[in-house]
Length: 496
Ligand code: ADP
Image (cartoon, rainbow, N blue to C red):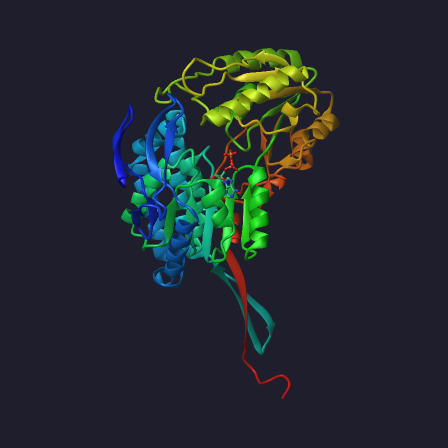
């Protein structure tokens, strides 16, 4: 199979690289395997890409190690920053192509795809700015000793990303790792390999030396597992399911104790008090769950509504959700495209059927939309209790469960009744309620009178089973640096 192909989308026709990107070149996998990637809107094959297996991970690690010890080591922090900034510019130049790739490969609505590319560019530029501002401390002990710290790169970083935000997750991972002076092997998700490979071309154009950023397409149980258990990878950063997060932590422990950061699942409560601005809260509740077709780890998938406004709120929320435009991702009016794959479609429909059988009421949706593509109607369940499976497990689709609460204490209790702790929303006009509840909720992010607004300047990550470590903001740099303390003795020997 060749190393590139022409792909036509309704918006652009472009040249799609298909190889593994190692040492700034597109190559075939050592074992010669390939796999297909599917357009979830029409269930047809877009193209096949070359597949990385364990042997390719070894090749990529050698390339990354050689670059780390060699050419990359001699690149100054300011030059690293300039390359990231250039990469950001190239993302913006090619926004139409990158967004179209997200629309065909992931099914993402084109407007969301463009906003992902804009945010990915912003993230790369933000970390480009950090590259020459990563500094240590000088520490005063006594007149005889100079002590200082160096924030050194960790080394070769393995990064495993999911399919829900293919190009955005790529940028979230690469930005801080590269700013801090590491080299990278990034494995894209098997459902969505195309945008990461297209961006590989931009890496060459941005001037990165060979081996600094390597991009492989492949499956979790082979290529992903090879990354998490590799003896010469110093750190692994993972975004995906809690189940796989546990496996990665175990593999790291059993191999070389590589550093691990995990950004995992969620079942986040979005809490609406009686005194909330109802129109505003309905918009954010809708955006909180149905944005990106419900495929967000931080989705506000449990809506908790206070009893005084419950009936009115649910009626109006249903009206709002019923207006969400489902359909062709390339239509600019589309808000919700298909789910990413048949497997995800089946998983979500299974949860919906489970909810029906558990005795919850389908207030809206609950069925497939159309006959072609993996579309699911926006679905609202009412009469839900906390012990139901649909209230406890992450569905990762356009499905929300609504629960009623009496007072603040009950809202906090239900809100925290989860093994997850990624995010939460609080809607109220009362500042004291907002602050008290946001303090009491065990979650890494709390949105007050909004939801799902992420910014690359602010950290993101989970409490409890939602993860380890933080991405974004200056906090992410802590995961990609290790601190060395140097004690320099100025005076005479202490012990003669
Ligand atoms: P999902 O179930 O939504 O596909 P996963 O957690 O399975 O989420 O996948 C997220 C990423 O983790 C993907 O890149 C996938 O290939 C990878 N992955 C899956 N299984 C493993 C594994 N055992 N080891 C390492 N990576 C894995």
